Length: 316
Ligand code: 2X7
Ligand code: FE2
Image (cartoon, rainbow, N blue to C red; front, top):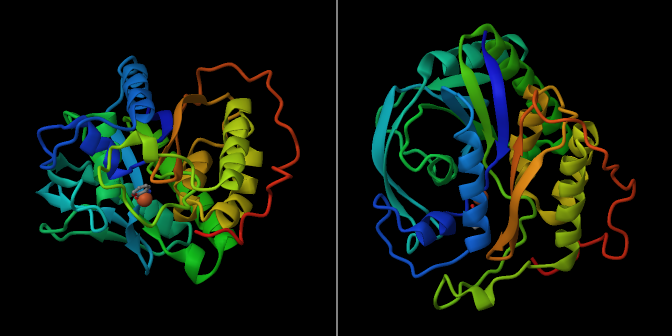
């Protein structure tokens, strides 16, 4: 019987791949963002202890405006260049897609009322969000992926509409995986708070320049992490619209909402492998094992950050 064996929050700043100097990426770095890279190392070690067949990755940087799209070509090979940071990320990828699983999630989501579409263009350029998260999880690209786009519903309609859509997409994902014979790791590829610097340091990996862009967004990130560690997924899901508004959160893409829904709102505590900033954004590397970990004794505080709660007027 198929199963979601883990869900991970796996942020995709291209800086992390740049700092690792893998053979696939052209630019070279001296160092950088070690806490996050070591967090990915710890997550890889953890995932290496479980048996899984496929990574299902949802990315904010494959933005579709009409419906949710799914990669529908068995092999995709090209160069991915980050449009904002071409100096850091020019990555040659060669990946495999688990098309039948993608097709089934696509159909089931449509039955539940979502607009969906399979992407069949063999020359399609895969976005850097999908590539960075997948690379950091498995630099050797051993397992195939299912790639899911992020619909622009949060900006078209609002976060509440997005939450509803992601709840349904999560339900479709869960039903299809459980009816399959596959063991799956879900990947929500995004940062948490997303206010960022508008000027890059002369040496991008100069860590004396790296810090959170705004203290208020840091407090919101900590609130989210506290709920993850407490295993309170329902409260976490409910706070996502406010979090997104206050921190210009990349949660706007729906990845975390989709993943929590697909995991049926786990009450087990999540394991936080790392938290760190990249050009001022907040990034957490987090793992849920829906079935294995015991419920947390940690109780979250009920209030959201108070002293610095309103960060909406800040300079981002
Ligand atoms: O896409 C990103 C991101 N989410 C965070 C930080 C830096 C760059 O790119
Ligand atoms: Fe991003």
